[in-house]
Length: 164
Image 1 (spheres, rainbow, N blue to C red):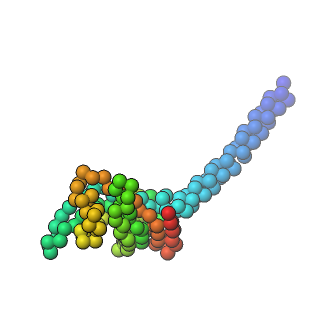
Image 2: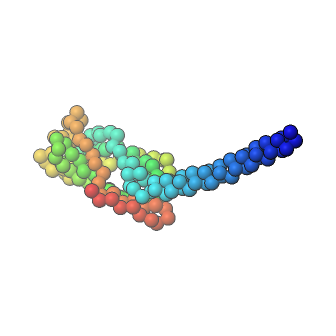
Image 3: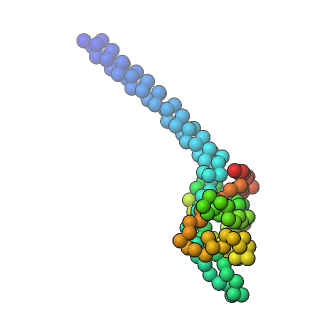
């Protein structure tokens, strides 16, 4: 009977040690996977930054010039601070590109991960082709804005480029 108790105790102890031994590598491998996933976040521009247009307005500047104002929200969706963003905004109405604008956003302070900034882009009417001005003046008309040919520069001087 003593041998049976000893045998059961030793068996239970060895099973306990075996379970703890196998549990440790599983935790380490999940941490490695998380690091790989975090590194993968900055391999794609669409995962590093989000550029959205929220609003469009008409206004007159101090010189009496008519302007169309687009409100952009730029969000750092990656895991590294951003120092510069460049893109081309293509303005599309009824499946036709009606205007395009080269954008360069040189940030005074880095855009930190998870943070957003708001930009009001003013486009003078004289820069818009005359046959498309009515689409910009009609605030009910749908104008889709697509950011293309994007370049993101991080504070560590690394760049991501995308061309569509």
